[in-house]
Length: 311
Image 1: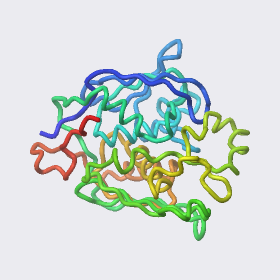
Image 2: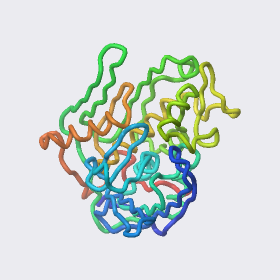
Image 3: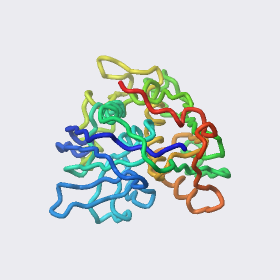
Image 4: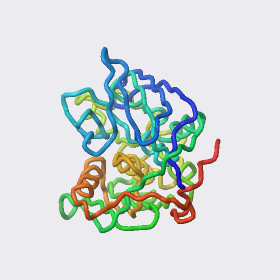
């Protein structure tokens, strides 16, 4: 039987929120089978649990934000996508995430630090079948037309692979890879995707800060790009780091569905909002998916049964 996974022990991190600039402590703890990923605001007089699911997403501007039942007036947790991406990359099903502020710490702007934290806690198999969402027919969401067109699509596939294309019409970004494909069957999430950092443009900084966003951003946790070039002294970690970060985000956004997908995801200029719309469109059509598990691990797609190696 292909089994669910949780952590062997707890692990902690301290950092600042990318948008809030607030200091925040994060404690990642083991959780029982069929719990899913649950964020817990422990800084409140009465701690509030926020189970991650598509309906809990209450805001998708600049990041994925969740609240109980998606209530915009309820306690929130912002910027969950990098941690969710790391959980998906390591195949973790059940984790409690205790957090002392409204935003997950940005750490180095990628998911690599979260992967390290999770692996340092150790990964434990649980006595329950791992559940997948198998996509049975194509689902697509689109927005805009012409130059403003964006779209995202899920199609049936025995495994999980993602393809993403960007088009920023910017000299620094245009010099790098614009399209990337990643197949989870490779087992190389940590090597090929996890180190891709979030990025931002100096021309957007004033607008963002006027809205109370980007207050914790720096060259220590983001790629910063002016009108012509990357400003970070050490340059890029991958030749196609911009588009790889968009795939990293998409992996995190899609893991909000609560189970790993068996599907092929393809997207053009998609983002947090469109990714969440895609999940809602999928769940709105009961004949478009089914819950699957594998009694015989050999029938599972390549790469799904192996535990991620320790660092």
